[in-house]
Length: 289
Image (cartoon, one colour):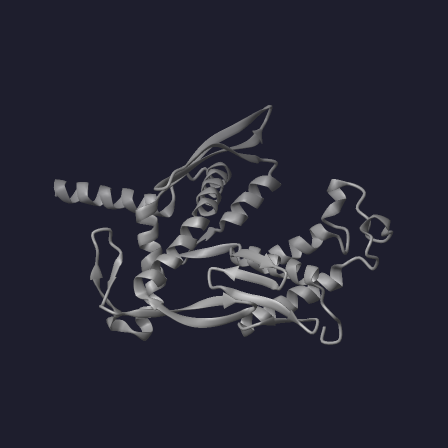
């Protein structure tokens, strides 16, 4: 890797792959790329990838090595003999194919996560992939996106004898509630270094800051990334603006995942819904006692 010169196209492919794995967004210009949120700048210096974040740089180098290892020996994919894909069913098993490379990358992602009490749940990508493997399909049948609210309605179907089983699932997000949660997720990291920066909450549940408080954020400029102190409220809203920009994809993925889960497991309730139902039953039982 050290001896080989990397092209901007190769770097771009690696950055996009990294972004897909970590659910980040990518912006680019003639000088390089930027991962968001976080404003992590990635460029080429003397034909080698350069990034201020050592962990991300290591991951990019690994991805570049994988891409180089799986790349066709000729720059023209159409004339490659060994590893040529001749059918869709064959595509995933051909050594060196693009689909094989994608699946290898997906294999490094977590397929499940812990829900507590020794229980696990499948990730959204796992649910969706499992439904596809079972011959099912997913489609968006409704979408609403306003400045304050968004909703996605998804239909999932799976073969069942001579017919299909079909379910619909929806996911909705109110902007204020969604961003309030994101605000506190983000501000916890700041509070670890500066516990007294937050003095309370406003009428929307957002953090209130002490007078004159600043928070350092990473700003990109001409291929460089530097930490700049901004007024705390501006730093917070800068972060939340990015979260809301990404919220549509979150809403869509959750709707897809729930619809797939409903068909595959017959589980019509999320863990949160089950907890609410159990709490309600417990209250009724207490009232009868």
